[in-house]
Image (cartoon, rainbow, N blue to C red; front, side):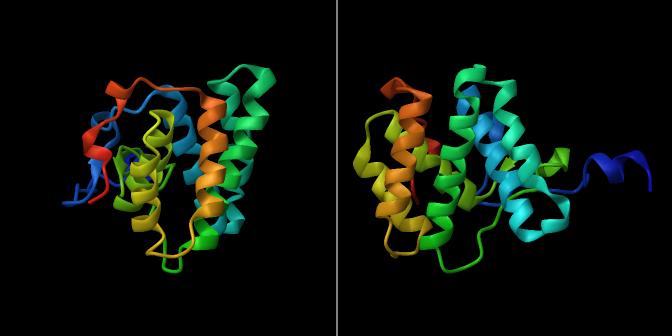
Length: 168
């Protein structure tokens, strides 16, 4: 195995409904949530990776110690809210592949769209993201968990809402 095999796939290409993380206009808190969520998803998909451990420690790198654990728990509830509503497989990119981690899948984009919209006070747009992501299933628990996480992260200026994250 060469170095590129361990650090990146070197072949990951952007698809039509994906977006580069760098182009998504996410702030540091939202990027931390994305990284935590990816490690949680990895842990659900491949329990032997124990990705949840990294997910729980990740907020300590971004947030003050007195709120880091609370944000980790709220992120877990946000992820779990989606998992309880969505019936089909959730597509996420590997948090450990540098090439894949640079890209938001369509599903990750919808999930973060909920959070960003709520932080900007755009509840209707958050509901659209949730409905699309959860395929028309019940979203109230997901939206409540997302609102709790959004409140913990704080408001975001309306002009910070990136139209590229809007539901399609």
